[in-house]
Amino acid sequence: MPITPAYSWSESAETVQIVVEGVPVRDQSAIFCSDRLIKLNTPPYLLLLDLKHEVDDGASSATLLRGRGIVFNLIKVRHGTLDLLLKLS
Image (tube, rainbow, N blue to C red):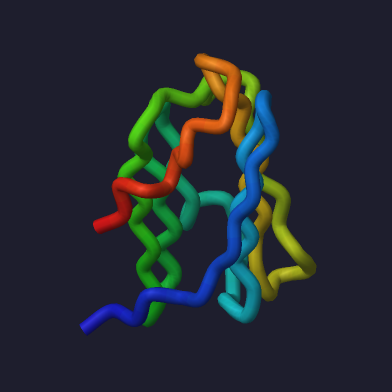
């Protein structure tokens, strides 16, 4: 059974930042981002975030943290405080 890694998030009017630490991320093949879904799959860890509102997946980015985590910088389509991650499953 997969383990959901610990993560933190914050948002401004234009962006949302999600930080996942302590997870071994070897390459970008473990990462998937779309306009409403964030997925990090690096066994035994699996993080699925079903976003409440759209983000601009073309302008958003993910940065690896020396192989031990990742930072997602998401650009909102609709600006304002949207509580983007309230629809977590």
